[in-house]
Length: 356
Image (cartoon, rainbow, N blue to C red):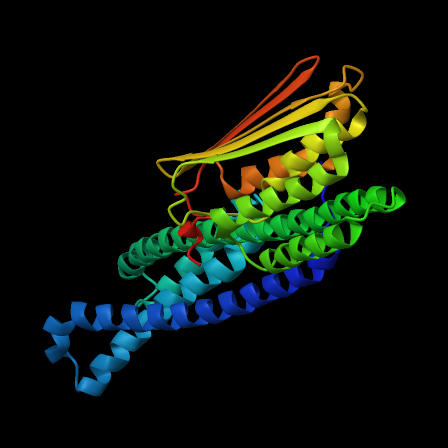
């Protein structure tokens, strides 16, 4: 199933721009902190030989200069060599240039051009550069993982909003069709049913603004919807709705179960003039909801016609909202359609492991 998020592209660009700005600020602060840390470490490492300097000013100047050499090499490596050479797999050129810049820094820092004087700084700068690279790649890996998590979370939220918005008109059209059928029959119950529909729509609009609603309210909504449909279907259909167990203030995603009920009516009783049945049960055991829908169906209704937008929508929502904590089983036979859904409602929707 393809999802088009045209309206959300601009929002995504704004979020990514904000992330870049935030990342740049963090990078500057981290590098300032790294420079101060290296300076302090150099001063502490040379504290025992501070008496060899003419003054404390000379000692601090020496430590500051040493830290500057180290950090300049690290900065050139991190912000020039790695992104423009190493990341582009130009390994040979990267190694040559890194060797050259370390050697030049060792020559500038050494008291003379002789190898004994240069070598101690050369190998020391190789050690500090390697340490800096290890810290760089560790931090970059952490940033990439965090960005992937944030993008995945954003994608889920966008897709969930898209799916939720699809449920609203789908339910509205089905309900209006029911009222329209009764109006054509000039049923005296039509005004009352219009009021009942308005109450259903009020709940639907209010619940659409929430991530979760009380399971009790959602089941009451389904019960009222069934009462409306039962009046429209008259004596052609027998509807049974049973609730077993203590709801225990459990919460569920709004409008998650109604597509199954609509599906049973649309492809069962509504598609035939024969006598039909719809049996719906909701039982709660240990914070797990077991929702079952069994309806008779005409043999002429093929299995392919049962796979409309409603079922595909609710399947995707279940996968996003309750990953690894729900089980949906559908058993379709020639004259019967049986749907069983189990959801562990103790699992939080879109778990807060995303560091909300």
